[in-house]
Length: 268
Image 1 (cartoon, rainbow, N blue to C red):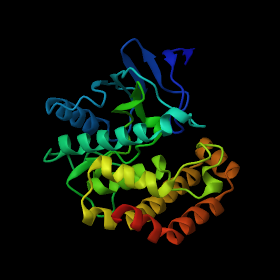
Image 2 (cartoon, rainbow, N blue to C red):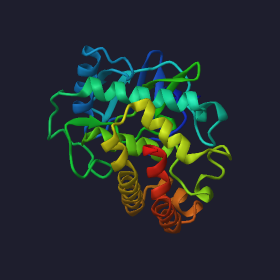
Image 3 (cartoon, rainbow, N blue to C red):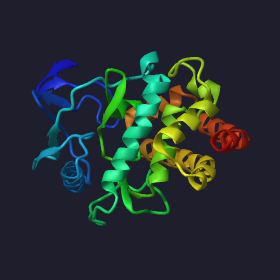
């Protein structure tokens, strides 16, 4: 963290890089279009006993919002070994299940400005986080304890959120794409099975997961394409540095080629 005009500037993130500040127990950041809906959702989750997320404090008239600060560690790339252990992965699956269990049956405003580009195209009964990447998970003592940054939350099926999380935490990447960001030796099939076990997926959900991960990866590409088309400098630079759209083609081909391996690991 570095000092800034609004307090301590928090590191990490691409969309809001350099624009997120901490003042004591409050985080001040740009407000997404769905901020009012997210604040209501977070309050409802807390009423149901889910403490694994911040709470909304205020919505400003200047396009910014304030939320409670969650104490802990957030891993940034290149990811350290401690955030990619089996215990860390297991805790992510358990935290995500707790979120979905708390969210089950909660009513949400369908017109709250939910961003659809990373959302489940089939829609669904709960508000999914849709961006459960290491940068958005708070750890304490090596265990995931909270999710932050609900900017991309939108209605969907819980399994869609698991597929999105798998992309980052297994990770569901070809070796070239994973190099430099993740530890060198990670057993994808074993970690995918561990995530499914920790979350508690049913046999039917396990059978559907590999194809859904491919669909979620395509949604991730569409999200980046939109950011690049809008001229977002962070995404333009990152896309060029990572090899352009050939990287996304390579990831999608890798997933398709290993679909049966993943299915066997999940159902074996």
